[in-house]
Amino acid sequence: MQHIFIKGTDDSKPTLLLLHGTGGNEHDLISLAKEIDPTASLLGVRGNVVENGMPRFFRRLAEGVFDMADLEVRTKELAEFIDESAERYSFNRENVVAIGYSNGANIAGNLLFRNGPVLKGAILHHPMVPRRDIEVPVLPQLPVWIGAGKNDYMCPPQESKDLEGLLTAAGAKVEVYWSDYGHQLTHDELKAAKAWYATHF
Ligand code: MLT
Image (cartoon, rainbow, N blue to C red):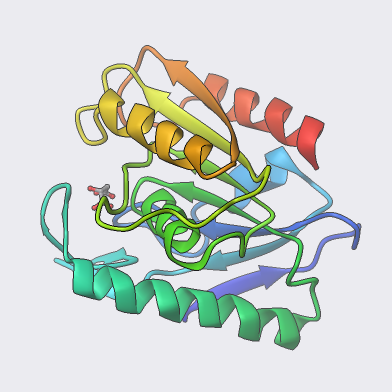
């Protein structure tokens, strides 16, 4: 997968896996991640699917309607890519925290739904429930932070609430931040994610 790896200055910190929203690329979340943890290593990844020129992590049939077969294949591909990258760049595979926005948050969520606790934690900006047809594997005490907008029409509030419920039922420790805004990332949301991260990692 097309990507950028930036080695951090503190090897004890997680490697932050950065997953952009529709139309983004591997560079999109670099400055956000540096704000959250200036000493962590960063692995920015570009989704392998292109929709009308816009990179994504998996195909969709319509807005909010996912191509489940493609989601399955792409999630496996991403999981393998993380494993390979850990070897290639010598970072601790056991200490990877995902930061995803929108489409990137959705594939991060699906990674947990399909593969269990293969991440040390996750910051999910404006995610949806990736799928409702499987039982979520046990995610013991896995720290997950969700940023949601009360007026997000792309990822409606109920999606965030359902995701919180499913992850919590699987054993994850979920915190949800609610903004009064829509699908956009605000500075206050970033500040809240940073504060949560600082208490967990
Ligand atoms: C998705 O397709 O993952 C969601 O609709 C969010 C997005 O468009 O990125």
